[in-house]
Length: 354
Figure 1 (tube, one colour):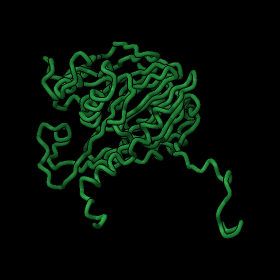
Figure 2 (cartoon, one colour; figure 1 turned 135 degrees about the vertical axis):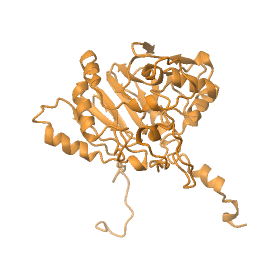
Figure 3 (cartoon, one colour; figure 1 turned 30 degrees about the horizontal axis):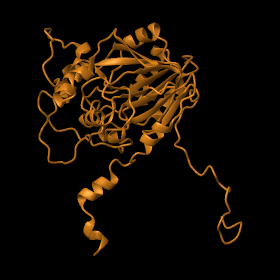
Figure 4 (cartoon, one colour; figure 1 turned 180 degrees about the vertical axis):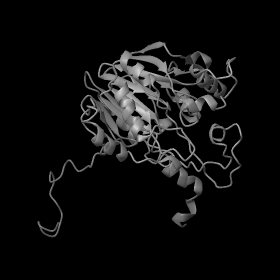
């Protein structure tokens, strides 16, 4: 029998998805976090994993789905958020651009699943199913009302869900989560998964989207979800001690305002008074890809004149960032391997072969 006889589309998918297998799951599980530090991994899009010295594991906005998969597409509904803001009807060509770097069904130890808002690239039915099936029975699902509505519609028990709004505080082991205002204006023109109690003509942001300040012994982490630039970043920066801030960066198509631009990322970092600002989200959608080197170039042009007290950090999906140890790094490099060179005998025709 030919080896090819057993190869099918289904076997190919199972062999190759997720593309990283359990590599990152294994790394997170094995990571020992030293005292007075905190370790983070970028899971793609705005997904973030946070681990502390107390072995607390938070998973924020992990999404394991895809964008467009065929060109045989219907027009956007007139009520779609992108159609509403632009008047367009042709479906946007938002194909997923990066691999899946984590296997949700290999997650075993997590202390909370957290969502900033209900957009489909920030909350995931596969993650919910995997956690319900494979993790401890008391792992909470934390998010604003619209996210909890979505989780319960999927089958997450209501008793496992915690509805949050700005001003709330939640303690999880050695982490404190402070819930802050969101500035995601796109979510205000997005149809929620079910009607919300919004008697006013303008929707209630607090029911739809929130930002988070994750307080740890190693530093405080600000996750802004899909927030646009807002003057209130300066309020958050004045009221809170922020070490690392994450902002959703991207190249907005003409006529669309949905992501922070390179200058917005720097303005955000300055306003939040953080030590490090990290752009995310620019990796995922092929039609909104942006070059984070723009941020570095603008930073060099502006840092002395404006006396910036923070640094940008350009990350990669699947990469690790440890604070405060990595606070002075500005560009991520994956481990290059071969730490044991020349610990064993080489095997080449003569010593100067290479």
